[in-house]
Image (cartoon, rainbow, N blue to C red; front, side, top):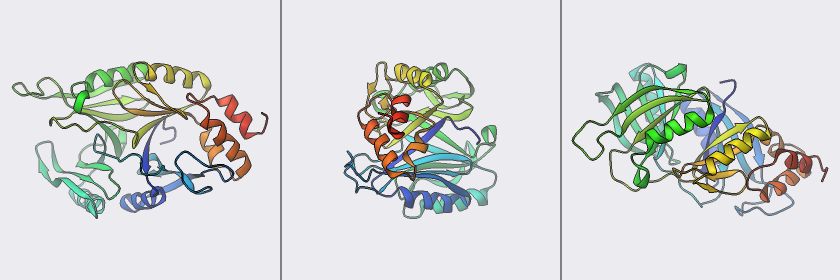
Length: 301
């Protein structure tokens, strides 16, 4: 994917590099795009060792991810999972088996009404994957799935349409509702839509559990300029919760990071002094300011 606007971000304690290596082994193809490190000159809020790995940007099966080492503050749950579309049962079995190694099977791999081969698994790092034989949407292999549960159950369609309006380019490709006669009647059983050129899935949980979105799995919006940052920040934090360093929660509790595309250049620079200055400047911000971060990086402040 040449230009991925929405990048899933996986929060780990200290396993970012190990997770990256694991996923490249699972999918058999991938690459590390960049690695960032915590400052060497100042302490950090996560209390990670100075100079240690902060994040790893990597790509597998055409999907870019960011893995961060943030300490034990948050734990990934299955409110966000990833569909893995494959073409054959042997391929599904192979990928599912690798993901299930030291993980937890949520739905065994097998034949279901919606697919000749499907399985849902939570891997050794807590990330959930739904492996399915079926036509790839827009030729994508990995597609994020947002499950609305707890107090957010029943809001999947509302959120989907809000996101499409905000990003300004998108369409509903598939929408299936739960049948009449149950507690979930009329809610979204499965909907697939396009957002910023990427396929996404939303669903309302069929179970009344209390799992909710949290910071352990967030979505990064890669912004080209300050006007994009300002627009996304304003819209997403409305009725939500603004956080530090470009993080926020929207009205549905979903965590986003509104960041400039240049953040990787700052945080993965081999110039440790410049990198440390940019990081220190970011710590003072809620909404990120590109000009101020660039000035800090270049020692122009």
